[in-house]
Length: 169
Image (cartoon, rainbow, N blue to C red; front, side, top):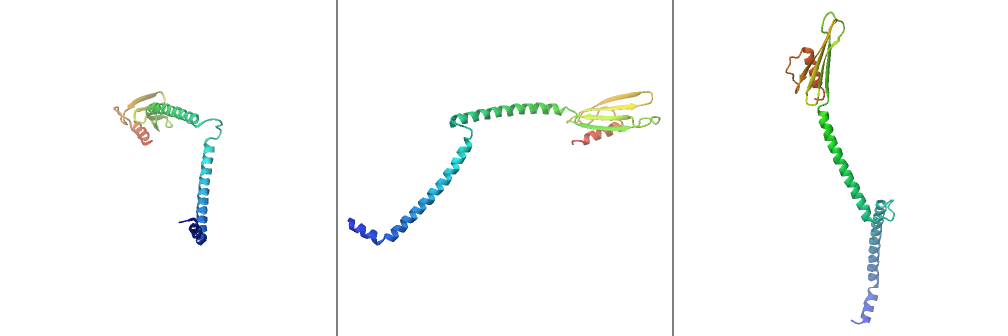
C-alpha cells in the first residue's frame, strides 16, 4: 500500500479513529488518576514513617528499631523470670483464711476464744486455736497438709479450716 491509500483509509474512518483515540486517552487519564492516588497514599505513609527523621537513612532507622526490639525482648525475658520467681513465693503465701470465734467456757462472757486457719495456695498451713479462760489463756497450733491435719481438730478448728478451704476454691 502506498501513502495515498493510508490517507484515504484514515479520512474514511476518521470518526472511528478519533473515538478510539479518545477512549484510549480517557483510559490513560483514569490510569494516571489511579496511580496518582496510590502514589499520594504511599507518600503519606512514607512521611508518617519518617516523621522526625531528618537526614536519617532507612538503614540507620531500621537498625535503631531492631536494637529497641532486642532491648524489649530482653526486658520481657527479665520480667518473665521475675514473674516466675514471684509465683513461687505466692504459692507459699497465706491465701486462705478462716476464723471462728466461740465461748470456750460457760463462766466467761463474750466469744473471746477463737480458731484461725491460715493456708497457702496448696492448702498447707496451720490452724491456731486460742482458748480464753478467766485465769489463763492457751494457744495451740496444728499443722495442715493438703487441707488435712494429722492431729485431732476440735469442731471450731474444723469450722475454721472449712471456711479457709471455701475461699479461692
